[in-house]
Image 1 (cartoon, rainbow, N blue to C red):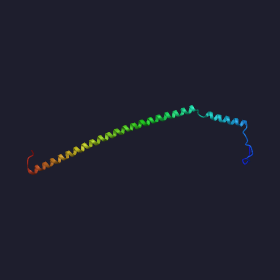
Image 2 (image 1 turned 30 degrees about the horizontal axis):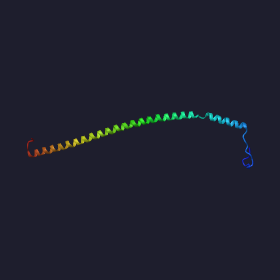
Image 3 (image 1 turned 60 degrees about the vertical axis):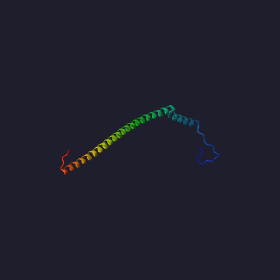
Length: 115
């Protein structure tokens, strides 16, 4: 091999035939260990199937949560409507009781009998 600071005119040394053969066999050994196109396609298919299953599970969970939220909203609306009706009824009863109290006081003040 030529020294690192050699001039332009020097020829690079070429590897011997046995070195090339050893390198080629090392490269071939490495290449044979790499997954094939079919292996890669199968791996990607398994990944895709796994992701699909997980997404379906997440989708089902989201749907379930959506159903629960909708049910809770409906229950809240029903409870709110019932509270409003009870409050309105209570106001009507309170007004009726006040009216009856005033009427009773008037009758008491006049000494009249209630008819």
